[in-house]
Length: 229
Image (cartoon, rainbow, N blue to C red; front, side, top):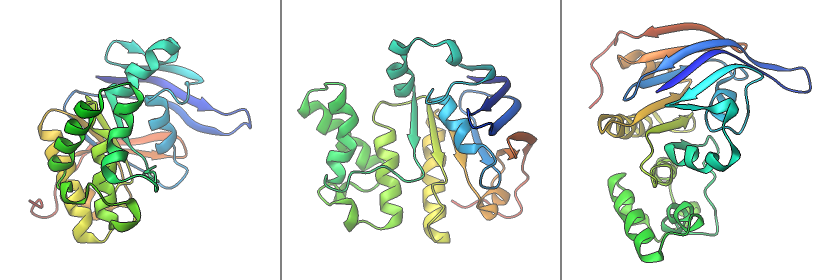
């Protein structure tokens, strides 16, 4: 589903964010991407949604060559890939329901249909009771669920979560990981960036390790303890 061949990304400043990165991710996989700050994780995700174009190498999402993708197809690509951003990007002056409906409004979906779809997804991520609240009224875990709901509105084939447990306590972090795991079980490919070694070490998932823009490891973890339900 996702194939990177010798991908490098350099910026006009001379900074090299990624260097000669090659890997593939199959449909339906759950993959952790780890590495210290500045290792290239966020750059990688921005390449996937064509916010950036690789300086060298090729990226394929399905049959699409991302580097050569016509601008008119970028909206279709971004429907295919749901992203939970590190800063969530929820609008403070809109309710949770309105935040989740926003991408549907942008593409011109009928209001009644958009509301129904948003309500179904909020129910799926277990925050339907909070649909009329504003982001400031929600806890960190609830905000993550709202951001995940918004990322799911187009039923994407791929869901990217950039540090979704970064500011959460251990119990809430596991709840978010369980939600992502449940989404993955429906067939959605999930790619999650994290620094949480407890989660990584406790789940038998594939781990891609980036360091200074290079892919330094690609391994399947053996769980050190019983997987959380």
